Image 1 (cartoon, helix red, strand yellow):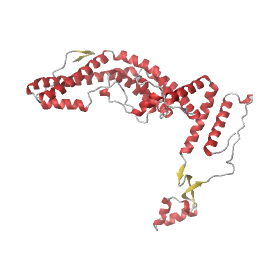
Image 2 (cartoon, rainbow, N blue to C red):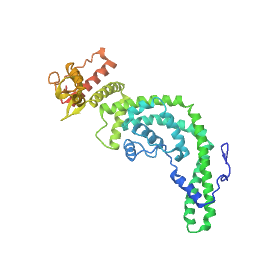
Image 3 (tube, rainbow, N blue to C red):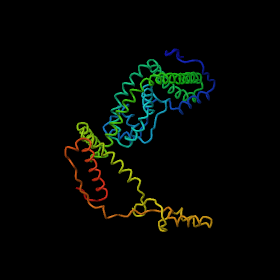
Image 4 (cartoon, rainbow, N blue to C red):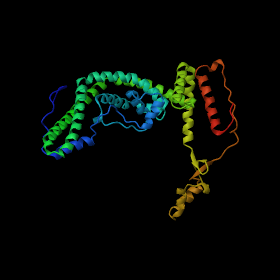
Length: 382
């Protein structure tokens, strides 16, 4: 039984099994709940693990890998709280608190699908969260130790029950031993549930005192995430693969850290590229790649089918005629290539003393953004 944080005795006598069917049901419930406990808060896919390792992460670094999964993955695949070891429970408590912070949504936006930004941000967060995890482990104290012992005992009893169930089919004399093992197993399982609840309450209380430190490190992580994401968008992530690509990204980020001027250009250019990317994604492709948008008019060849449907009924035909007269029918507007004003581009930058600082960085970022537009549209740039 439990008294405070001290575990006393082998098992209680609350559970009494008298038939083999009762023991079988206890074993089935354990198997459906997966009695095997894991030292992980999340279950990343194999592809995510490969991306993490290629980006320069080490699989044995549990916390860094879980932070990477939280920031990089499109969908989170967390382990069940009942299947976690005490160490995984402590890490999960910190990570769940991190996900509840207002800055987390911005972090996800910058890091999702971007291995460079996700790994660099995870490294920034790792040090502070490791310190928080140590303080939580101190608070958990004997509860974590008791839970570890109970989990080991549960695992041994689970294996013993499986052996007993196999033997009792051959020798009915093994039934008393099987029932005793089932009683012990069920009792230990209940004690585990109680200790886990007590541990969760203790961790929740301590985490309420850690929110200020967590918010500060997440704000720092957000700056790192934006810088890494902009660097990846502006300067690319190299032509190599695996470790070679990770090394190139590391060198690029180091250059940005060492050059404040380059950081300013990257920040400005990254925002401009975000706007360009959004405009290109919103284009509507139709037919052989021609681009259309929606407008109002009375071009019968480009009307939407919903407008033409008004002619199908005598009751709605007057509505169609009224919209036609007012040029208010919804139709496709074809974006044809405009030759005039869409030729080659020459950019001239003023580099006099009056443009030093932020203006110079903005001017260079704008020039590079124009270069990106020209490259995308097949126009010459100088």
